[in-house]
Image (cartoon, rainbow, N blue to C red; front, side, top):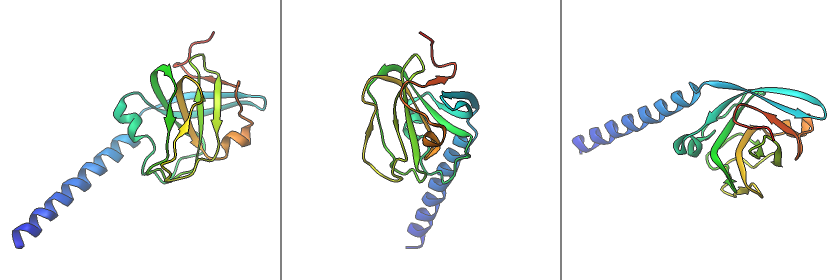
Length: 155
């Protein structure tokens, strides 16, 4: 039993080290500027951009705080219908589904933390922006509004 307990302890240490390394790398992600243009004005955010399948799969999972001026932008590389979920995500989020031209297709407000219910885009989109729940309502963000970021090509 002594050796088995030591092996289990070592395995747990390795798992925690891997998890910690993943969280550190996620928080070390470079920030990029993004602006939401609504009828109430221009609203600036700093966003982490998730470009790879692994980054998109991890998203904001396991985080317990997101500053009000921050967000996460998921780049799907091509326009297609997408669905998001909140598994292992502790923060209520507003999900902004964005077309390739940078116009907002849909806003899913105050999504439920830790839910495995999928939230569909409703149409082909190039990306999804996640911001703190309630911000979309606060700034009056609605379908048709504009998102400015280098990812989006104007019409």
